[in-house]
Length: 312
Image (cartoon, rainbow, N blue to C red; front, side, top):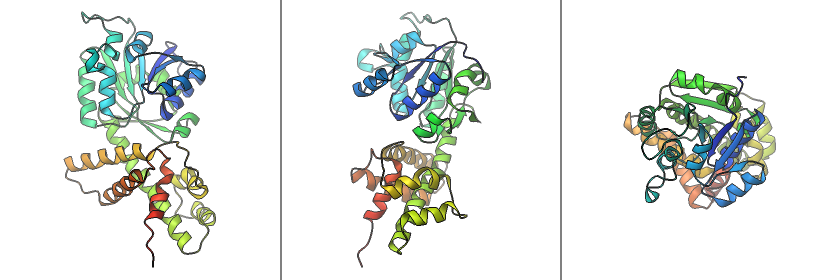
């Protein structure tokens, strides 16, 4: 593993993914300073022994490398530019640059976006930041927050090779598994495509478990059959026990995956590609959110399939 060139890394977004990333960074010898709009998230982060900042600008003033673990690309843009009502004073750019446009930070500036976002808007953001000398790296992770914390998630990278080399110590800390998909926007495209496969695998596993149960096969028994047959999948090992036990404590949330699925459908429409299975999956997830399951773990998709049971 590369050795850290500087010891402080900023983090905006202190939810499941953000706290998992912080644990990886701390284990690698970095100090983290983070912020979040949610006061409960800030309190949990501070209680875990991390430094907390009031705004992204304060994070940027203390760290030349900042990771984002926010909901979507709109949130990424807001973190970079600041709240429009505050005339940008709370954003990362305000922490890195003075009112005259001069840099406040002497070190190379790097923004690493770990969210799953809109490829086109991220490419535009990357070009805008590059004009100001800021490296922008897409680094969405394929895996749950627990897999991220354990170092088992995979980074799907988009950005310039030179920027990735400069950020190697931080990227090494986040995950040993990395794939460079190409330039800005390609990390998001890779994440959407892999999430399509992953999400459908979860939904198929849930449907198979409910189907087997209706046929009189105990869910735990059927899950063991799946794990030891050609029907096995990563979803069976990562989510099967949660489905069988009804443990929907979130490691990743249904509403977040629905956001990704909607991005998939929008991207498919732009390239004139039909995604019939993903359209069915979107309807399933919309039903789960409408039923109040949006903040449960993705394994809770099995609840929506059970709700679709037809009486004879």
